[in-house]
Length: 554
Image (cartoon, rainbow, N blue to C red):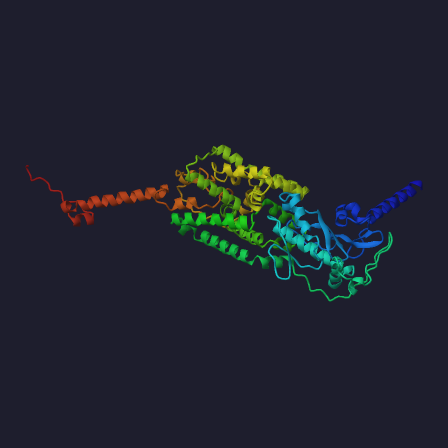
């Protein structure tokens, strides 16, 4: 019996402890709130619907603080919402906000605390009823500066904060008119207006008392537009340019045989498209795909899948859709060889090096085969870490220099810049070194690429590899085996081998055929030169001249 009593007492103690923890004031759990209200001497607990904590100076109510995750949960880039603590005063002015939890790759590794703090500070003094937009000013909106490299993340953050703070303010009886009146009253020399001197709706007096908040009389708010719809509308020009570029690439792939017969034209087309990929898709649109996106999609499918999570960035959504299609038709090579901005940067740098006769360094076949497996080991390692912690995986995914070289345009801490620049320097001497040996994204794309529908897009001859080794020696990513087969898991679809396939001066089978034709033509010319002596009719009929026998007795 005593044991039962002890268990009951322990259970009650635990329940009381949990209740006390829940009743703790918000400043205890989130000390950032004290900076939002420097004059406050008392903070309440989260309460009401939606939950918010009152903030006091003595018995005077100063404002409220709350967590956005308790009010609005908009999936961000990672598929998870960003939780932010926000404070606002009774005049409807935001007094401060601070991100307290997130799983955003760009914020976890890439954006410094100083830049993040500078971004959040822009909301101080904004009205809870303001319509805030990110970036360029728009009519009827208040603009705040974006974070370079994290545009989508800050758009989600902006929508989350402004929707949440407005809902909490309205639930506490604050209206636009009342907020405007109180804000005007707080200006130096302003006279108190009737609205400002009206009784405060959220009344809370004394410690432990709960605010009684009647539902304010207000017009029904218009339904809020989905964030991704607004994002797609504001990026119409970029979307159109991306779609045009992808349509052009699809045409290149469909008419690759014709282009391969015109190598000079293909050279200009390919170099032009690589520049488009680097400058527009990469440095302008920031649509560099990453292994982080692959794991985010895998986790979304196995947990909670919402299309809104992926529609939030139209450039990545369209690009991933195109890559998925090309994986089924051509394999991984289309993305790695044409659409990867960092891959394009490496290739352009290597081509410039070759133009200046920089010596190229290649590994032996044995070393190359061993190194090609490293990227698959990196992929498995990152996947294992992602099962435990997405944030931890993001840090390890810095093995990809994409964020430094493309998303943040080298504006980052020097160790990251040094690593990315080092890989680019290596590509001067070894074409696309990172792509061949270290890229986990390329390894991930190679797995579904094995199930491609067609294998005949890249043409081969019976003599390829036996004995002809021309394409194998010229393939700069070494995707052609000595036996002549193209390794689709390593091919970057540069079409160099297809140019050789149609080149009668380089392709050995065509060269031999051409040689036979030349010999036959030369033989015909020799025969024709003999026509005056042998007669045209005999030669054309294939008849030999009549042999004259010597006379008898000669």
